Length: 299
Image (cartoon, rainbow, N blue to C red):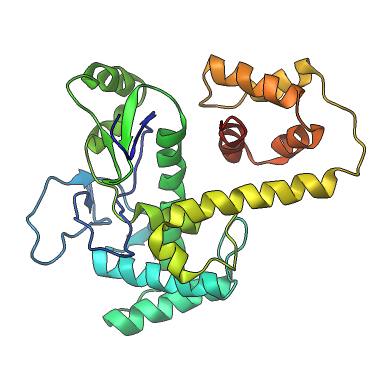
């Protein structure tokens, strides 16, 4: 397998992003509205137009009363708006405005002001918040693509799911389960590394700008490992009963996205590991449990 590629499974939805740090991405994946106005990914100036992928935009919170009902308005986001948002989020990250699950209100306010001032727009804070919700939603699906084994390939340099003639039958079988994943075959995910930084739970304030420019994904993985280690060390002196194999299996087997081998390997690892690892797993939100299990299974 070539460097930068790994086996993965795809998910049903992907947000088109590639890292904005250090090089100019090729806008291969665009967002366009379906039947009504929506969110559209615009190609950069000077690039050739390429096949688009349609995804429904997130509605803004503003609405109008109309015949007793409320009609939600939509905002068209283009590449320049996204880059301004990313720039502002990095500044807010350095200022400690990123919580475990969401940005603090000051971060959304700062992003709104930065985008409006830079691009002469009139966005609301809720427009910015909804855009970040879209990032978080699609991060969850793409993260499943990268963490669940299926025989498909992930190219970490091109930021895309690679489907070749050898894996086409695997892809077609997968689409029977996840038909909405179809448009993302061999499509670059623009700004992907930035999305990882902004949506991963274990972000740290001491992340340096220089390290983020080099490889933000590596930084996040390292910080997650540090956070988990600190948690386990803190709990070592608190005596709690060691979980049984049946109890561990009952939790692991309910995690969506793990195959049978992963389940048994995780059960074995937790039965022979520190009990606090199991209690930490139980305390995590459901959508983060698979990330922690796969972290534990790393060689």
